[in-house]
Length: 466
Image (cartoon, rainbow, N blue to C red; front, side, top):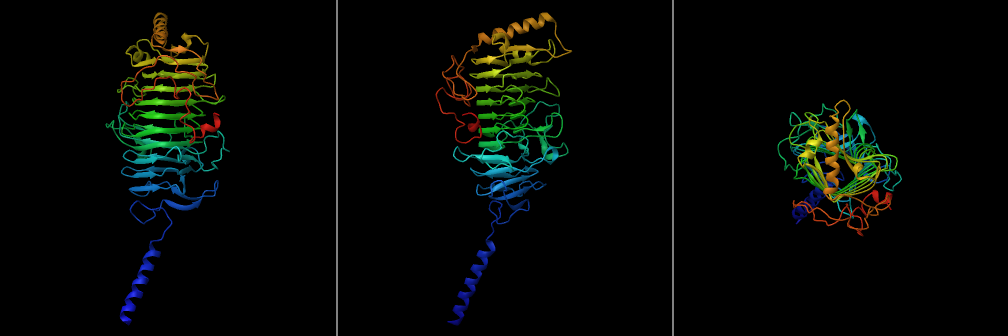
């Protein structure tokens, strides 16, 4: 009997030891009990919530697979990479913050080639990336440049001379900053119901961290319901690749709302650009190739159902450096200048893509643009020192202006104003997409007439546009 009691007591003591030994409030590698060294317990000063600081380093997220949970705030200290072979899962409702810093001292989440992020928020529980100072109460208003941003790098094709590139915004000495490859169906993960706020960083001329940067990201990646709010530089920038997206919203950014380069060929639908009255450059800066400009593949993305609202002085879109692209069923309001195409006469320029029917505007509505004349909505521009002959230039302008009317574009007021992005009607004829990626929406603009905006309930933009 005494021996039996001894074994019972021993078993009970062992159970207590195992229970207390396993108790650990730190973050765990998926399917493990170890807290990787990149994580340090902290308190988020702005909200008072429990947090973990995530250090930059060679280990990336510290494990092959790891989950950031919504019960903690996750604070990025520097350039935090999701390395090749690592998968980071982010729960719906999670808040990720970037520590303050500029240039090479900025903070950012960077998904390297071969890395993957599964970030599936919902309208009720979006995933928010923001500055460490953000109290999440709107008090930062439209402040920008308070941290870096989110960068995703993949293995799809780009049209550079080497077939790859070093991404903007981080030092070129960082090998994990290389993008490009040959897999146009490459999969970098899922980004759904994501809001990226108050970011942007600059380490030199034309070398910035944008709100959401995609370098050679492939079509296997999912991007749907994405907001960029108050970024210092561009909202979204694509460097080559084939990634597709729906429900993109760029608000109050300091430079271009949407920028593409290096042979980007994705499909996008339900796209909004909204500029402040005192800040922002173009609605779209659309470049083809930089080294070389005639590199293949050409930049030929397609946009359906966009709504771009400008600040009265900026230009809607510039196509240059041999870039093509198409806009269908869209609305452009309140810009000082229309859409222009770079024309170099016999040289490689975006006018070549127009002649090949690889650059087109079809069934779009314009209002309060420049001189309000159709010839100001869609035109060609020349580069100083590379001017073509006057006869060539006149013929090109005539052809572009004629295509504006022939392709169903109109100048009309659909009720879009700074405080309302919902049109008062369908706007006229619409293009029917042939690609199954697109939804067949029989109206112009990013929001259906009379509908509740799809950005309602989960974005910072909602407080700005009543």
